Image (tube, rainbow, N blue to C red; front, side, top):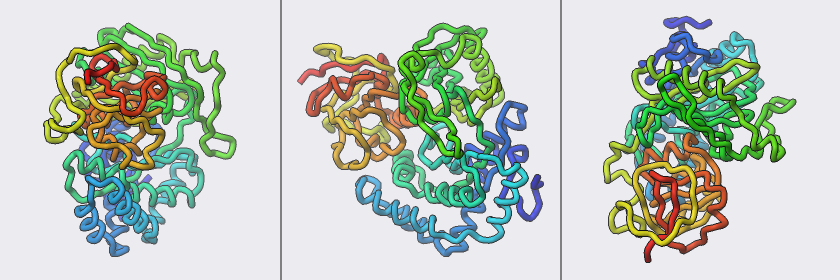
Length: 453
């Protein structure tokens, strides 16, 4: 194992050498994995390719100053123009020839890990703070199982520091520091069940633990790809209070050749519980242990494999309580507006409520984020599901409604940070609503109603 202070230590750091104070070196994700490891919590083994290695690589290629200048001038209010700039900058990073000492250090660490299948995950130095999660903004790759693939994924993670969704998110959070990104390389967990846990409810602050769970790898939960099971637990005990069974129509597993594979589930399997009562209680107990260690509520990704529970990530829960008005996605005078509870005509949909207050606006139904200019500022975005790829649109939306997803998905976390009322997991929003319809979205109660004209 590489030791701190060795010639390679500025390139590679093992989890056991890192702590919560090492975000400038390991990024938020890497620093927190180190903190969890040193606290004796069950974290799969791994190491971090430092942010300094990234900066050295782009400096060696003569790109560092030009990347910073171009990013500073990026037209973040124009989604199409921003996409063009981002594609150019990310492409330049992918074309970088990685310095030999970085290649040698990374491959040496990978071999010391045992050259297993690994997850390769971006870890930006500005992410996982109390106000900015960067949830799902940078790239993550699972089931990476060769040295060549590992090196390619590292450069793809580096390039994501200048991705469209990252640049848009940085602008929304008024982050102006030079982008710097570390990369986590972590032994892959072939989970049978996985999901996300909030050690406190970020919406109500009512002291309850929220757990969302599905079968297979956890990307289906964090990516909002389906409606997961939802568990609500009292922190005292902890004690299970409520279980809502989602419709988990598929799972993602590691395929026979190491690549992710989607497996469709029967209706019986789709409505089976992913967690037993006791498993939910045990998870909540572990989540509260993590919270006590950090001294603040945590957003935790977890996985269960062969009867063992692993923690894959932990970050502070971000909240909209302190989001200034000038950083909201909509302003007074725009077509969509935030307001109190108005008189309404009738209830149209019920789902899981996320975000502050209520907003009214005109419906725009979209199947994908491929044409960000198709959503006008202040409209209500309605989609089958949202992912971080929708970031440029989320900034323009007055509110969001989705068919799928849970309250712990990456896109939902970002909506909350931006102060955008959302109702997710409605199942039928894209069929019940229509373009041009005026609706009111209540992010507190999880209700969509007709809005007065």
